[in-house]
Length: 324
Ligand code: GYE
View 1 (cartoon, rainbow, N blue to C red):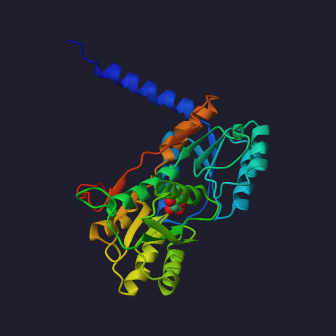
View 2: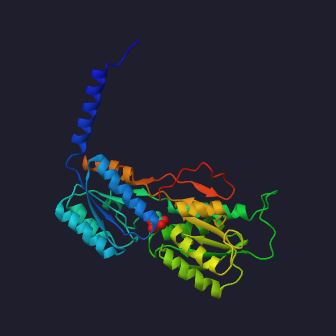
View 3: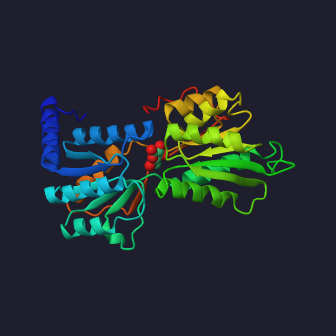
């Protein structure tokens, strides 16, 4: 029988470690993050920083504090610094042409992370890795189709009036807000059983979710569903409801996106009905793509993270802690 000699194994391990170091040594990635608006975002930041450290990649990290102009400044400084790869999370979809042209003239490849951009010339960036926000919107609406169908026949439940939905949207002009709205409407289009009676942006912030919900509950009656583009806003909205004696998850059906631990806990308590996962742990994939770009290789145009849907009908007892 063939046996691995311990000496041979050590040589192999040493060689592969040394090779890894040579591959990544000296690679500098400039990363522009948008801020710290949610627990989801903080996990995303940790994931990027830890993955860079694990890969031995030098990360130049800037937090843009929710301002596109700060991101543009950061990207210009990455160009001046001649980093090997630029990676950034675009706070909004539009307005990136000029700075991307500058990166392209400097010969620095750009990886778009988490949120998508809108540019006519798609050769201005190498690829995108992140959230499949259209699908998240679709999954949210698909849950509602099931929740409001007759459990025996699967047909739409016989109701006297359409299901009245309030939507809490993310940051105006950001791709997750645009696409979560789009995917949701796509599935419900032409279905007279559902009506979006109100939609407003809470900027992905818990504080704005709370404020918005307070005024919505003043102004609107007979709300059946809250569809919220992120857990932060949802948690704020839940506070507003509970303060007024409204039972979220029962009096009003709650559908939320992200799958932070706090939202999963609320789902387990019956205060939320459906949680659509959005995966923030993008760091390892970002670093391996950055490495390929630094070596001059091409990468796929679009890579979406794997994401699940959790509902009130699932057994969540063995679900691992989320880490965000
Ligand atoms: O859903 C939200 C965040 O860009 C997909 O941004 C991301 C969103 C995420 O702050 O919580």
